Amino acid sequence: MKKKIFYGWWVVLATNIICMLGFGTWLYSFGVFFKPMMIEFGWTRALTSGAASLRSIEGGVAGPVVGWAVDKYGARIVILFGGIVSGLGFAMMFFVNSLLGFYLFYGIILSIGMSAMLYIPAFTVTAQWFSKKLSMALALLAVGAGLGGLVCAPSVAALIAGLGWRVTFLIIGITIWVVVIPLSFVVKNSPAEMGMAPDGDPLDTNGRADTGANKSNEELYDSSGQTDYTLKQALRSSSFWVLALCFFCMSITHSTVFVHAIPFLTDVGISMTTAAFSIGLLTVVSIAGRLSFGYLGDYIDKRYLLMVAYFLMAAGVVILTNAREMKTVYLFIAFFGVGFGANVPLMPAIRAQYFGRKDLGKIQGSMSPITMLAGAI
Image 1 (cartoon, rainbow, N blue to C red):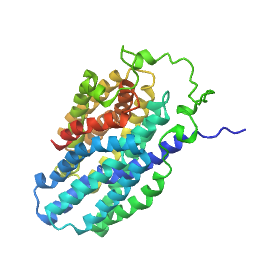
Image 2 (image 1 turned 45 degrees about the vertical axis):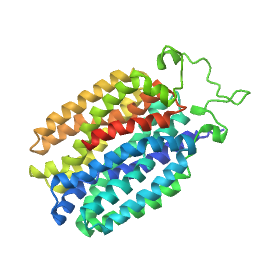
Image 3 (image 1 turned 90 degrees about the horizontal axis):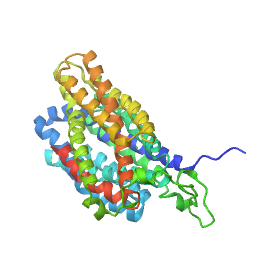
Image 4 (image 1 turned 180 degrees about the horizontal axis):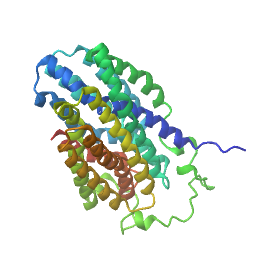
């Protein structure tokens, strides 16, 4: 008899597609809209990029609320809400005629929707479905966002060239509704909801996961033997703040590159189409980092893997500052892409490792203000 695919993988696939569309349009395509809007309205670069800073600030404010909502109501309803609001935010950009409207629709309404639609609920629900295979499941989930950069940034550039930025925003909004709303119903909040156990393990006679002796508990959790932290306990631990500082520094680098790289590359004489393709290629290269480091995260200490990832990102930025032709840009893409991609599955995996799963949504959400402040800066 053919073995049935564990439903957790369908949850990963659904959230993967949602993140591909969300990050591909909201994050990786921002630089494509940057100059057309700046030129039409006569805004400075600081004013235009202010929407991205506001996006980060809003995400920091919304993060704890989204984390709380995921733990209380489940990921499915939070993603559904996020999809509806995100589609509305994109569609409303069609009517923008002022900087205030840009900040309101893009920096606030759209950002609220994306905060609810993307990684906090996606990572949290994946951590409910997987334990032994968590790093790999998160790596596969993160592939979607990487593909989003390849598909969406060049597509948005082509749409803007043919139809203008207003119609492009409207098309994206409708696409969000058509894709995300149905996929949100594929997401089930936990394996228990379907009479299953994490990783597809069999249930014992009491309906609990029968995983055998878990020899890794001492490796995964602190010396007290506690496997599930409350939010208050996590906030009191040094591990929470050390990780938050690491993610803060990484987020400054990540946000700077994805907001300003395309305008910078066009400044040094590279065409808009090629610059947009470069960011798409960067996200594709990041898939190698997402998959390889996600796989290694189940076998090698995640702290050491994060050290390698941070080094690669730093080296990439140094290379980018000296880029004046495409061969240097490709070198930047190789270093930064793998390092950035490695972070995507490792960050939520190491949080689940240190703090458990019971309050994981709240804990992940509580780190958002710290990382989003970095993005705003």
